[in-house]
Image (cartoon, rainbow over all chains, first blue to last red; front, side, top):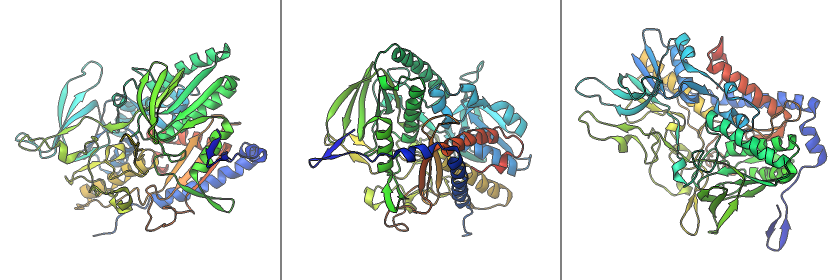
Length: 55
Length: 482
């Protein structure tokens, strides 16, 4: 997975070990669960106002 | 009055349940679907890796509709007569697919018609593509179950020490639903790791996206670590982390047993040998014809050449850079005020991801996705408009849900386990980039977000349970948002 561009060897970025660890760390993920749900709720509320203005 | 809904997928089923809830019993709601079972399609990827059984993603439609006082016909629509004929007003011709009376036709008159027929899986677009031929699919629960069996066989070979190449991706240059292939790929990677055979497997993703993370919506930009970063960076990072190879900007020319032949955007033609290939097909509209009062063919006026139904969008041919967010439909009403088309059944006015061609002229143009949350919101929107037209005499649709004004929340599974599984939780607003409102990136950087983690898997599983509960119309189903 090494891409060569203009004689430079470019690799995609990779997560660090702590990042990978935090992705499955239960206490942190419980907090993220709440945060993501809030974010998605905001998105749902934003997308459910579908009444059109009267012509 | 009678409302007929063709199709009982996410959008059609949502519209049917909401209409039944809003309309008094004196009005009739009729659903016509060729399938006996309802399928929560987003979870088919888990069936495809053997993590779920087909019974966990399906249920019988008739008992639900009987309880809800909705008439259910297991049939497929074949003809629409929006002007009626000498015998009756507007009607659709439906052909039974039920066991025992398959092929019998019925004339079904309507006051309002919702076309929510979903896609026709066009495996024929690429020679050799599809479960009948040389590749697998997860588009239906039957396909996913068959794919799971093939995967079991591949895992057995890996366990015997045989190296295997597993190919996942898009079977044509104009495919959509790259997100489903992405999810299947990473669930496959996760399943192989669980079985302890990942080191023997070569995983390759073959896609028509010009870059990873495009997902048919032109990619997106996210704020992270003080930077605005394209989704391609995150997607490539995940592929790199999991050791998965990728081929982008590809159109598949043919699939032979154990070998795929493709062309990439730089014009190169190449081939790849595989032991297992799950390649999604392009979508077309279902085969519906339309006829006027005098019997002349209206199909070309009501439907785009792709077979999807034309609605209140601006279909004027323009260059990609001239397209506007306002071209996208809002009410999903067709030229006939009592006919609507929602979900995959409506014809999008243009691609969201930039369409490209190879130097040989082969189109590599991801089609716009319109599944999941937007599909369900379209179902709700049209149900509300029709209810207002019937009950309050509204002359035009009272609700709108343009994909250029709607956001979407999407959870893409990258490994199914409540302990160490992960999923990418994405939100984007709006779905169709609006470069007038958001000149830099086309979308709000506040509402366009993404992160990977176990929490995403929990949410994905919660959505699976919640949406099946809602689709079964169990107590207080209507409190669960789309």
